[in-house]
Amino acid sequence: MASIPGRLELRGLRCSGSLGDPPVDAVLLVDVSVGLDLSAVAESDAYADTLDLADLAQTVRIAVATPRLLLETAAVSAARAVMQRYLSAREVEVRLCKPEPAGLQAAEEAISVRLAREVMDLR
Image 1 (cartoon, rainbow, N blue to C red):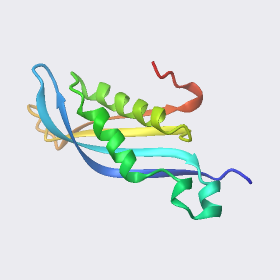
Image 2 (image 1 turned 30 degrees about the vertical axis):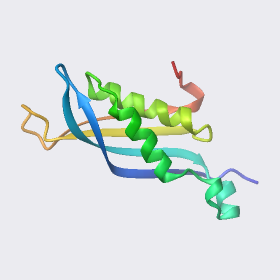
Image 3 (image 1 turned 30 degrees about the horizontal axis):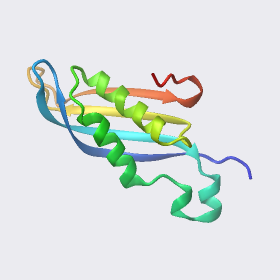
Image 4 (image 1 turned 135 degrees about the vertical axis):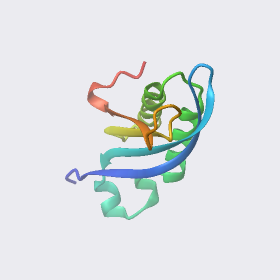
């Protein structure tokens, strides 16, 4: 069976996080995109051959909930957690957004990170 590269995405996932020094609780919005081979699910049309979206959401929420100093660290943590949880993931991209950041007079502060299986170091 030939490989069918594809992406599974969740957008605007609401997560609770704690950022800064001192830590401040915030609602963070997360977009997560997982690159994977869709050939098995294309043939089977079975849930067992794809990622469980509820589990993906929970994996991201747990990673983001850990108190962090920086938004960047939270984004990398979420991306690493997805790669560790889903061995079928070839790549993951996470965009983490903090709406209405204090002192910036901006709609949002955001960071994006992309990790690929072949170059990723999970330490």
